[in-house]
Image (cartoon, rainbow, N blue to C red; front, side, top):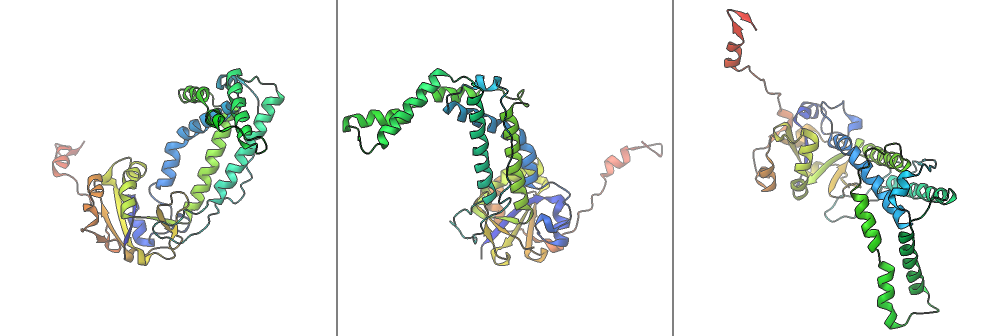
Length: 326
């Protein structure tokens, strides 16, 4: 049977040896943050800003210039229903299997669209001005799409290319998108769209973290080669000496399922005992990428013993002067 692989901070090896590779909800607290938790911390601000810019682009499509929106104090209630929170359609793991639906994420996105629709309605009620050029372009696209969809008044064949071009036209929007991408939004923390982005990103992260709490994640060799550098960054700050690789025969993974968030991992809700796990410590990135790390030199995790660090004699002797510790 093929092997599946998992990366962890080597500080966690003793705990995994003692209780097995278990979901976070069924094991003692780890000595080091998991990849999901660390990734959430590392990317919280960048995701907030990216979401903020996405909202500004959506409003540009409605005819609102970003500078107008950033000056606006319009607000609506931010309320997510938490429907289907952390609910995932379970699909048995197999190469090429469909990615299961993350029902909590689908519900969050639906709520987000409702909140944005309410915000746009409030902008209109407050008579926040449109940008004339963006609004003209939006209307041109809508008119062209309406003519293409009108079956009773089908456009002439010679007019179709121009209508299709108009329906897709977005030269001004492209410029607006580019300008939005160049914005420094770090000083707009109190803006409604910043708060909405933060609330949405935290809900999505909570949803994912709750899913991962109840599952163990493992990768096929081909995917592990791709993911290893990312795990090193989030688990061990890029220090491969602090990283351990675990491998498990697929036959020892109970009811493996496809991962909803990545689609390239196998997950299980059941604990994998240390007797079925092999490990390596401090594997460099090059060895994983060229495949040499997967060949030999594996040790059984159940036999793992924390290395005893002996003091360097030269350091120990130099730390004493005239028989006194310095």
